[in-house]
Length: 175
Image (cartoon, rainbow, N blue to C red; front, side, top):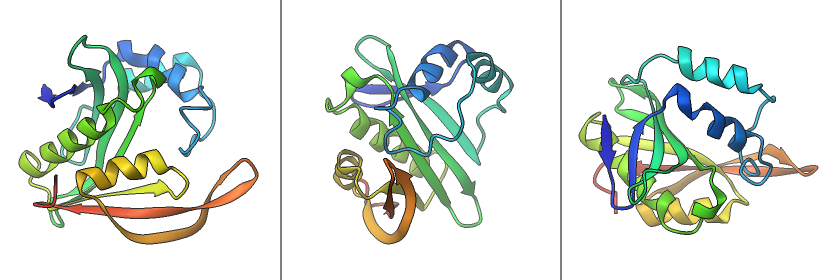
């Protein structure tokens, strides 16, 4: 299954994507504003992708490919979806640094949210973002997300505590 945007195509992650995912997860610049957990071996990442449950309503993981050359540049996920509430959480990152600042993240977020609203019949998509991650906040606001709250000092990086912002996008607010 493919979900087409203007600049990107969203597609299911494959076990063959493990090398890229492992490389991104071990790049300090890529992981700067993300909860990075503990290091995993390449074999563990391969096993994760091999054994991962198929995409379903509660958890949809897409690889982000450039439409122009079908190059995998990142991933995006809608998870925690509940039909009773019509809500899901969004996570995204672009691992290929040469793709930053070129509109791919904006198109991927817009495309994933459109998929969530149209295909999954969601009413709302939420996310959290570290307050210092200005580039991500710009993308989210451009697509229509609004700040709904602040979680004080819940993210630690470089010996400092940072706030996280909660943001939300209602069906019909997507720009």
